[in-house]
Amino acid sequence: IAVEIHPSAKEGSKAAAHEIAALIREKAAANQKCVLGMATGSTPKYLYAELVRLHKEEGLSFKNVITFNLDEYYPIEPDALQSYNRFMKEHLFNHIDIPEGQYHIPDGTIPKDQIKQYCADYDRRIEEAGGIDIQILGIGNNGHIGFNEPGSNINSHTRLVTLDNSTRLANAYEFPNMSQVPRLAITMGLSTIFKAKKVILMAWGSHKAKIVCRSVEGQSTDQVPASLLQQHPNCKFVIDEQASAELT
Ligand code: F6R
Image (tube, rainbow, N blue to C red):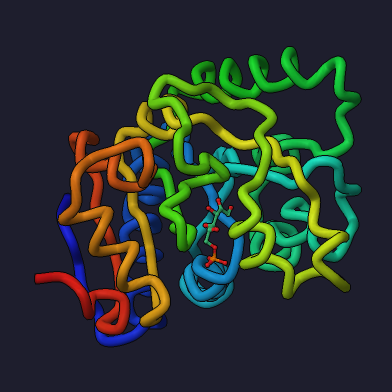
């Protein structure tokens, strides 16, 4: 895994945003679509702010962009405060010119008996779009990517999963109290993520230092899903100095 260390989260996010913008422009010049895999949570906030700035101030258009988000709580209404559908609109989609219908976020309201089909369709739509050109990831304290918790199968597809309690605890700050944090989520699978042509995992802050080190320098194991990225041919970690503190 290549590791790019920046002085701060802001600078790392800018570098990632500029890399994404360059690919969007290159694809647009060739009349091609650019397919992006998106993450939510606190990690990509600056990234999206910079993409919005590039759109508003530097003419970056998203007309040729198709996106697929990694995950969504289940069940959850799309307009709930904690919903990733709402997050993406507030941080990105409401502020850029991506045509409606070109962004996809797992739907937290799908009836349970239709989820299997829904997830299979989600993977199929990614394939029909030509596959993901750049997948953006954050990393959980337990090494999860998307909501693929420790023990997830490397061949897993998009599916309904049970959140680890540590994940529910880490995300509890978004909810009125712990009991309101959903126990389930829909997530892209590890195989879905691994099919991306390029993966950029971002991590900021000292609380991510330990898991970043385990993922980059530790054994590649399904007990630390991000460590499986060692097996991806084109993956880099974009991190700040604090998150790099444990690397040798
Ligand atoms: C979010 C996602 C999660 C987060 C991870 C880190 O779409 O897939 O894997 O990236 O939980 O969350 P933050 O960025 O809030 O530290």
